[in-house]
Length: 434
Image (cartoon, helix red, strand yellow):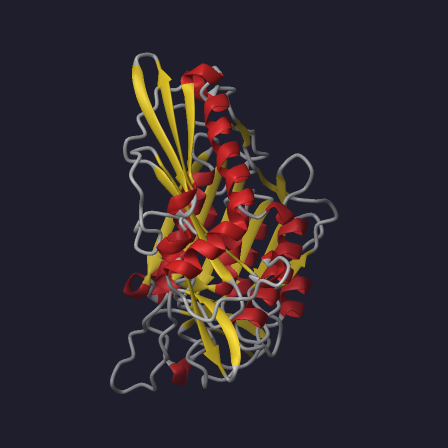
């Protein structure tokens, strides 16, 4: 099978150095106050690491340090950061990602380690400015991205990543130099929480970050397919806020970004998708098991003519009556489908046969002969197959598609099969619905 090819683009750096930390569970010794679990933090750090491996594969080198749960003790965190930051070069991009609990203490933004002690926070947590941003600034590297999926609020909601105090964006902005191409992305604004959701299996912020990095968010891209620091900032602020508001009962979360560089920072260019021009007729198709299914609904009343009325009960007579109302439309749709199949396979009209069976509720069979192989393609529209259930509710006649709520409508299933066999659209396991 012919596949689309990706045309790789150059990056403004030749190596990515990544430190990714995800602390989902904490040491919580019996003699200490317990630090609550941060759901999906481990999965977040692992997914971000895999994303950077993938998007820069074949483009530049990626050197990583992935530290999760008990691998992320304070001693290990400090040792890994010192090693990675000390080895940075001018042509590197440094990326720091953290998922866990964060807080502010004595004007310092701090991140918890696996073995953080709540009674000794200042001595057992990581100082973001002093131990990440300051060494980065002192290194030869001038390009840095920092992502913090943490918040600092109270610890009353199990779906937030919070501890105490607010992470301060002002403290970070005061430190960054205008000459540095460094952007710090925080998952939420002061006073808010960074949420996760089981439907995403990630923190909401991290989910949308990965979506943008992978190129699956067109609104996050500049012209030419470039993902920049500014477009990423705007995308995260809008998409995270909207998703949380819609899917989490009106909760709020607005990511904030600190960018002090005077120029736009290009993170990566999304590869162009090059699709080869191939005719369907040139493909060696074997569709013996291929079929498609759809499901449509519509109101009955607009189909009625003259003094016709909506049937009171669903039975064979009702099915044939509704099929008759739809016959003209069904003929046109199914004939068009058969003609389109012949055109796609570059077949002359004398090699296709169209048969219409109105008595069956609307079935058209197309037999297609090509290169001595007899291919049978069938499209069907059988009102009696999935049907419509008509009943009286509160003195009103309603028609309800199977498995749907009561409404005045009909169900019109259709299927496409290359085997020539009729299929029950209610129970087909492999179809799609729209």
